[in-house]
Amino acid sequence: MTDDTATPWHILGAGAMGTLFAHRLEAAGVPVVLVAREAGTMLVHTLRSANGDSEREFAVEGPASPGTVRRLLVTVKAPSVTAAVAALGPRLAADAVVVVLANGRGYREALAPCLGGRPLYRGVTSEGAWRESASVTVHAGEGRTSIGNPAGEPLPPRWFTAGPGRLPRVGWDAAIEQALWEKLAVNCVINGITALHGCRNGALLTDPAARRDCEALLLETVAALRALGRPQLAAALPGTVAAVLRATAANRSSMLADRLAGRETEIDYINGFLVARCAAQGGRLPHHTALLERVRALQPTLASGAAGGSHPA
Ligand code: PAF
Image 1: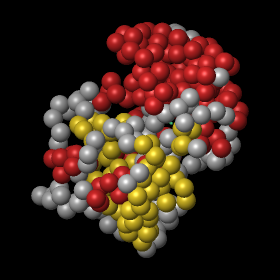
Image 2 (image 1 turned 90 degrees about the vertical axis):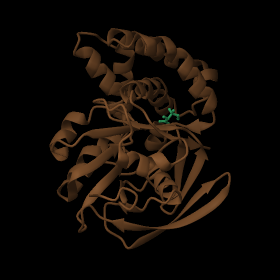
Image 3 (image 1 turned 120 degrees about the horizontal axis):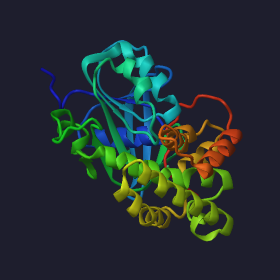
């Protein structure tokens, strides 16, 4: 039987979120191995936060390194999730736990063959972190992280309580499907517009053009959520978006950060997912569709493996 406390967590994606969780897990006594595109030996890495710098050394494997993977936290960006998990597929133990912590939705079907019947756990986080360099991550703001099984699992499993559940501000969410929809809706309203206007989140409250675009998207998202049978989420969305914009006013959204770094964005997994869901019911979202096309036109067609997060300054 697996000793849940001694089982290492492999973290796929050594970007901002991946390294933040690597530090937090090790600080809680949970062993961590980073999985990068290429195997290395060790990565000496610094986490910078309001409490000062903390340095740790992590083992780095490549996808094809030897050894079994029993616990996998996927922190690469949405467009890279399927290929990254597929590359690791042969190493996954029969009872492996796979948790995807990435913005956006729409990779479940593509991932299913790599998972071979294992459940796909999902996480949603409001932790703010950005990558200063390959060896420094800045923890810009504390947030909450929820993990759960979208197919339904009311109680936290052993792997959770022995692993991520030991971290402060990380909880099991039996209603993770609701949290995923809420996060998607917030990302739909904020991320694409900030990438397009090249502005920080707070400008969606203060800059007239960005605010107009944001309000149009918000109204359309509210209508879409109602049409998709999520009236409570729809009713709460204007307040939720306003609160997120105020709390993250000085930050660059993850999509703006991707755009500025010349990386592929998550637009197809955020606004694209909502447009596709509504289209399947015969609904149209003209503002989302226009944004989708404009952001797609801005981005290079390259695969990204770097995980991002909220970026201040
Ligand atoms: O993706 C992001 O950047 C964040 O989810 C959010 C909440 C939009 C704040 O920047």
